[in-house]
Length: 128
Image (cartoon, rainbow, N blue to C red; front, side, top):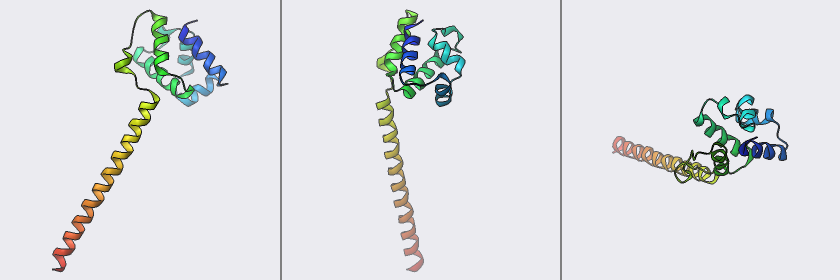
């Protein structure tokens, strides 16, 4: 069994999560989940998909995505990812989501001010 596969299986079982539950939560086919756990990477649709699967699995099981990528690199013997350029952690995702919410609030406030300004100008033009 692969380092990545055994680690994922160990963590999943430690959290008492079945493959079926992981499939339901991540929407990753059970065939692919079991292939990853068994180190059968050739059964996966491609490395890009594997990367996405690992990201989803890391979120669902609260695991470090960078560690999963390292284990995958250890299994294949090739450095597949540059973690300095490619890594997006859960904390970074939360910061991005928070920033997007702040930007939406700002746009709503600006939009509201513009609408109020137009209404005031229209009112002044109509009644003066």
